[in-house]
Length: 193
Image: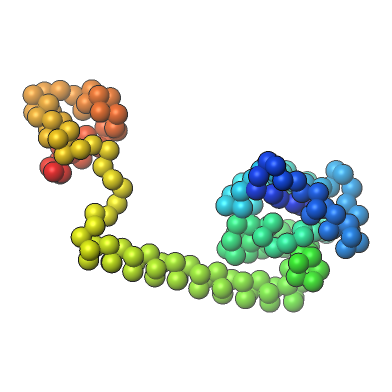
């Protein structure tokens, strides 16, 4: 069974050479055809959306092993990592992370670690929602306008309503002001100042 290696770096000026070297120093000899690297791909991009990772997913088979140097190479956050490892485990693919002491995340101890990661991810999600709600409440209490800033000024909105009343089409006004037809309709219906 083959051992696959995966590396990722965020910028085009970086390389995955060090990650591959780490795997080799840990005793994993990865054939050139089984090394996949996404270079210049942000960690914010989900693993399943990265070109090299997608290609690797198409090639790796049941019983084979994927080795990465660090957990964050697998995903952008705990949720993405968890989903990625679960999907690979369901396919019968071992996932080894050197950073975690050569831990196979699809083995019982690795699954325990993933369960803890899932709990942390859930807490992270809950805290994010809490902070967002608190921030919105504070902004609202301070009288700050919420939502996306309008692309049109109050004077332009008044002019749009006047021109609509004079019979100009929604499409023509949308083109004239560089906004969507929905924006023009919203201005017309809601009488936004």
